[in-house]
Amino acid sequence: MASHCLALSVFFFLLFLFSSSISSSTAALVQQQPLVLKYHNGALLKGNITVDLVWYGRFSPAQRSVIVDFIRSLGSARSLPPSAASWWRTTEKYKGGSSNLVVGRQALHEAYTLGKSLNNRHLRALAGKFNAAAGTITVVLTAADVAVEGFCMRCGTHGSSRPGSAFVWVGNSETQCPGQCAWPFHQPMYGPQTPPLVAPSGDVGADGMVINLATLLAGAVTNPFGSGYFQGPAEAPLEAVSACTGIYGSGSYPGYPGRLLVDKVTGASYNAHGLGGRKFLLPAMWDPETYACKTLV
View 1: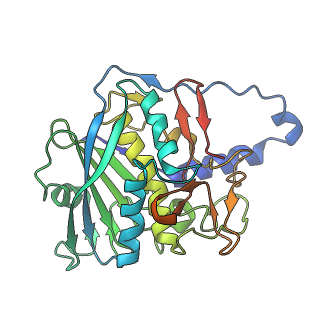
View 2: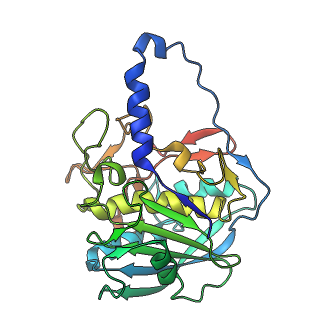
């Protein structure tokens, strides 16, 4: 299975080194090159796509609801602007038209039948519990007390294991590397130690999973088989959202996610409305029309 990893820890470390090595006066002289994700002529996942969910470990009903509501919000026209659906519509600008996500089957594995330390083979086995047809994305979500091989060097991964279908893994990073995988809801491991933002759902682990799941779902539809849209080497590509890591609102810079909306009651930071009054914080996505990372606010 070809896989594409979300490696935030390396990204933030490099950003920290870069930002520490140049002065503000020198930075003003640097000409930023346009970001271009080349299309490599491969198949994309377009049309109606079923998203099956495999929950490994113990998730509370509230945590599962956050994730499911997020996926359903991507296809909803009923949310207030700026919406999660408008964020997802940027994927329509990639060749082939729209990718319409619909939540399909769900499987709960609360007994830790494979243990609490998983490797890639275990993840593929869990994804294989569903006989995924073409046009399906199977998402494996691991609980906060489940260690996964490579966790902290990656916050999740996506790839393909069956013809025409994709696989995504995202882990709950509330207690494992939250500085990489739950930022900006947790202080970063590297760089300026600014206060963390308040998570929209009140659950740092669940809202961090939303950020990483959003990144990987966008990558799964625009580069599902390693021959779609990406920049750099195929084994470690920058994709639709991972090319814009760390950017959430306008005016962002390393260590600062950008200007965001703030809930007047809870103090939570967000940039997207979803179904049922949900609020989400979603990362910027590369827009193939403007060749820039597009934010909602």
